Length: 265
Image 1 (cartoon, rainbow, N blue to C red):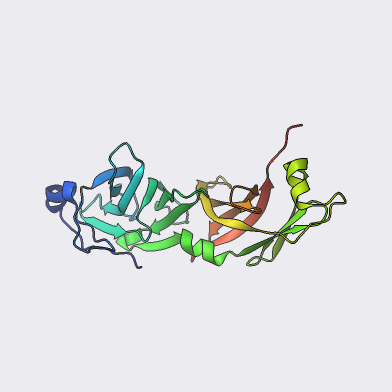
Image 2 (tube, rainbow, N blue to C red; image 1 turned 120 degrees about the vertical axis):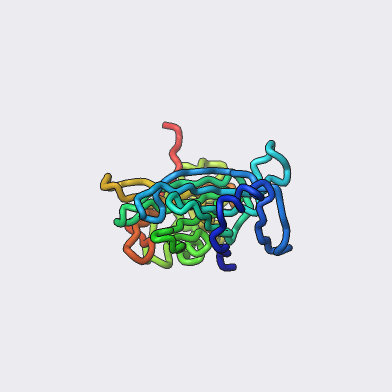
C-alpha cells in the first residue's frame, strides 16, 4: 500500500480535532480514533533553516498500560508556515514506536527514522527512513523491501560448521558452532562430527536498525542487525550485521559481518 499524504491543514484545524484525529485505515476509511502523540522530535527536515515539529501519533486500543499502538501516523509541521503534512505508514501497528531525526545524506538536512517493534517472537521490527527536503516526501528505506532484497541460505555442515550464504551479495560466512555445547551437538552430529541428516537454518527479518556515524563526519550510516537461526527461531546462531550508506539514490551495503555468541572461558 502506498503512503497516504493529506493536503496541508491549518493549525486551527489540527487543534480542533487533534484528540479525535481522523486517520484513514485499511478496514474503514472513515474510522475516527482517539489519537495520542506517541513520540515527538524537533529539527529542520525540509531544509529551510527553521526547525520543524515531527510527531508520531497513534491509537492505544488497550490503554496506556499497553505498549501496543495502531493507526500509527507520521505528522510533520513546517516550522515556517505552521502547516501540517500527514503520512500513513504501510505497517502502522506495533509496539513502542519511536522517532529519530538525523542526517544520512550530504545535504545537511535531517531525515526521519521510524522504528516499530512487531511484537513477534523473532524480535523483528518495521522501520522507515523518510526525506522531507523542500517539503517533498520521499521514502529512503523500508524494512519490508530490505528483507525481500537481501536473501540468505543457512546450511549445517559436517565438523560442527554452519555456512551462512548471502545470495544477494555473494558472501559466505562459516560459523564454528562447537560453543553450542555437547548436548546440542549430539542431537545433530554423530560421534565423528558427521551430520545425522541435512539441516537448514534461516536468517530472520530485520531485528534492529541503528543510526551510527562510523566515520565521524556528521553523516550517519545505518547499522542493520538480523538474527541467524538454526533448527527453529529460538535456536540462535548469531547475527548478520550490515552497514548501509546513502549513495545519493539508495542505501547500499558498505560492509557486512556475521557475529557469533561467545561461551564461558
